[in-house]
Structure formats: C-alpha cells, structure tokens
Image 1 (cartoon, rainbow, N blue to C red):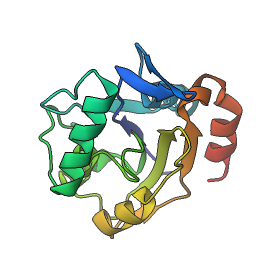
Image 2 (image 1 turned 30 degrees about the horizontal axis):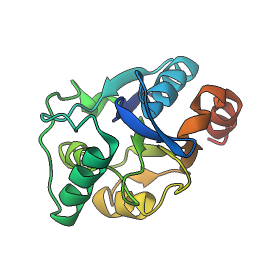
Image 3 (image 1 turned 180 degrees about the horizontal axis):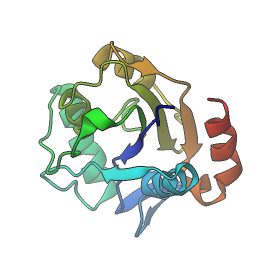
Length: 172
C-alpha cells in the first residue's frame, strides 16, 4: 500500500485584523489557527509561507499593500521553501481572503513548485467574503493539479471550527 503524504501549507496575518465587525490586534493569525488544527487532525507536516517583506501591522495599510500587489499582479518573494515537495500527494492550502482571492505571496508559493497531479484542498479565513475568486484563480495557476472542495471559515469562528474541519476532511 502506498502511503499518501500530506502537507498543510498556509499564509497567515497576525497583526491587526478585521474581526467581528471591528479591527483588533491578534497574536496568532486566523489562518494559522485553522492550519494547526488541520495539522493535528491529519497528522500532517506543516509549512508557513513567509513573505520576504512583512505586511504592515495596521489593518488599513496592510489591505492597501495587498490591493496594490494584486493590481500590479506582483509575486512577492518568499523566504523559505518546502523541502522535498515532490514527496507530498495532498496539500491543504490555507490563506486569508484578501480582495476576493489569495494573497499574492500564495501565488508565489504555488508557482514555485511542480504541483502536477497533486491534490490541493484550499481553505480560507474571511469575515464575510467566503472563498471569493480564489478557487478559480487556483484552478488557473495549478491547472494540472486536482483542486478539491474548498472550505471557507469566518476568522471570528476559527476557534470553534473543529467540527466543520472534521466534516470537510471526511468528505475525501
């Protein structure tokens, strides 16, 4: 029997965040909370996508930077690489929904590897915008990958998301 190896890869923002209708500072980003829950549930490896530049701490400045990167179709450099990406069959890919899609550093991550034939399970955190266009963008970026059913979780509900995550995992 061939063992399928699983990676939880995520980008998370842990500074000021839009949370339950207000802007609040958080120590652990919402996407990171979900990624760590998935890592434990799946007994998977975990990898944090770390942009070379930090996004601003202030929410409005951060979203302005994210919008500028999206509008310019930028690919911000990332600091680290996944060792032996070829060993992974399944990738749970997490990110916040910024301006209706994945942050551009996630695009950089995806374009940095040969993901042909890999199953990608996208999940995002948001405060009302769901997955936005991220699944369609992911299908374009990773046209030779198998894009599985996506999961969107409100950032304000990540700490209570265990049941939702288990149900999503069991869909496979």
